[in-house]
Length: 292
Image (cartoon, rainbow, N blue to C red; front, side, top):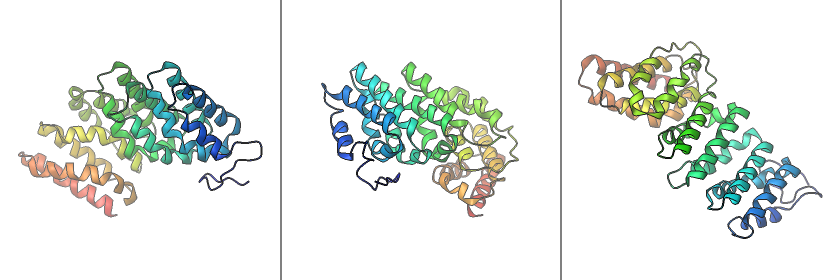
């Protein structure tokens, strides 16, 4: 049976498992007695059957990742192993389909063990498929950045590692030396001022694409919401510098809903005329970059 990634077929090759078999294992994940075995079975299926099983296992990934928040340590370990096995055989094009599971795992309702597992998995995926993670940075950067300030030490450490990994997926050589400041700014409000100043020193020559803009969203969001006008002004300078070298308007469109309102607010609220002029200039550059 031919099996496309989209999962249009319902049965794997003769030696494989049917979709119904995989669904049966997924249904047992929440069972206290059979959950661990079911997760181990899914992990084995991913390792043994590979690509033909991918559409069904990717569809089940959210349930597997959810189990990393289980009270049982054995279930958590089995869930992490199954998740890793699925991602080891998954296509880089599957990342977009995995995003809902990642966002749930990074969300406020997720258990600490689920957050840590999700962060570690995303970090590993960033090293394996940097372009695919770069593609989803617009959605991923903010939730990961927020967890670098989590009250749980293990979550904070995993988030810092993950933030470093995903920021390395921008593909922008000009920004690379400054990425540690992006991560540091996310970790602490106290670090924002100094980090924004450092980032203002980045000279952009290479074409700025969506991943680079997305990686900057956490620090720009925090800086543009800061009470200190000089910090807001410097953030506007960064926006202006980056958007001047955007070649494709499509690169700006995904970040406009988040960034444009913040720059507009800076234009309206800043009392200092010079700072306000900088904000107005950044807004024009941002809008021009988005229009082409």
